Image (cartoon, rainbow, N blue to C red; front, side, top):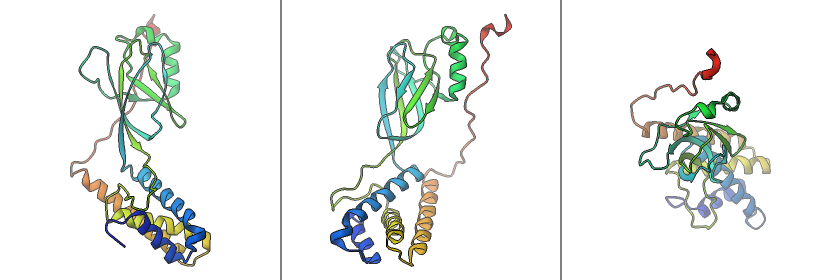
Length: 225
């Protein structure tokens, strides 16, 4: 197997180890490899993307980019400003609805989004409701582009990429074929996943992360009236 391994290299390794039929099972193997590839990218959050979009005045519901799997952070740049505001605060839909119902949109000044809530796969709501075409900048965990050509190489780092995709696909192939080595391949996959997570953690540096509290207690200004 070459280094770094190509899509074809990984296919060949899986087919040979599970003793599959290249003519009949190649497409299955390709699918298993890409499933493992996507699973690794999402579970390790190794693939990050960014996107810019503009709010529509008086609209509070929006959709994430199709390639966004998980949101890491959002920031808003108000119209006319050269700077981005502090990151949006993630909160619940209930809180946003309470703020809107109690007249919070009118009370908020300036009317620039400060909170958001995610709903389902790709919908997100913001508060206060934008009154201008402000820019929102999103950092997100991205779905990887599926491997397609035989010469394609995973964007993950080696030596982790080859082993993770190979053992991830072998676990599925072994289950499909009833291979007695399946449990061992599942264990190997889990071991390489643990190693890769440790690598990514160490890659961030030695300064420990700090706890961050999302949301805040909000009381409408009319509460004391």
